[in-house]
Image (cartoon, rainbow, N blue to C red; front, side):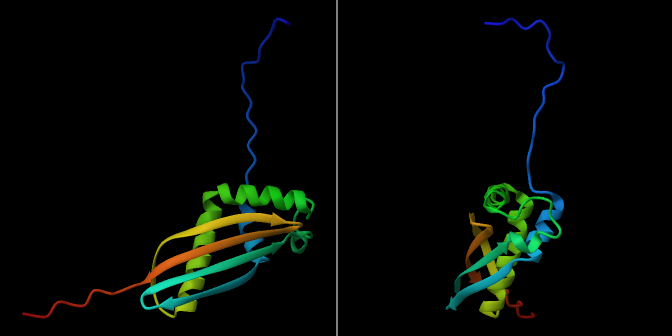
Length: 138
C-alpha cells in the first residue's frame, strides 16, 4: 500500500442538477395531454407532459439523445423546482377539466425517458372546493 506524502486542503464534490433555464425550456416545448373526471365532489385525473429533446436542439448544447433524456428524467424527479412547476401544471389542467376550483392535497409525479423523449406523468386526486357559506346576520 502506498503512503500519501501530501494531501490536499480541499475536498471536492461535483454536483449535477438541471440548469435554471432547463425548467422553462423543457416545459416550453412539452406537449400536454390531460384527462380526468369529476364524480360528485371527487376529481381523479392525469396529465402527461411529453418533451421531445430534438425540439430543443437549437438552444441546448447537450445531445438530444436517449442518454440526455434519461439523465434529465432522473434529475427532474429529484428537483424541487421541477416538481413544484409540474404540480402547478397538473392542478391547472385538473381545474380546467373539472370546471371548478379544487382542493389538491398532492400530485404524484413519475418521470421517465423513452428514447429522446422525456415523459412526465402527473396523477391528481382532488376534492371540489367548498366555500364556507356566510353566517346569517343577527
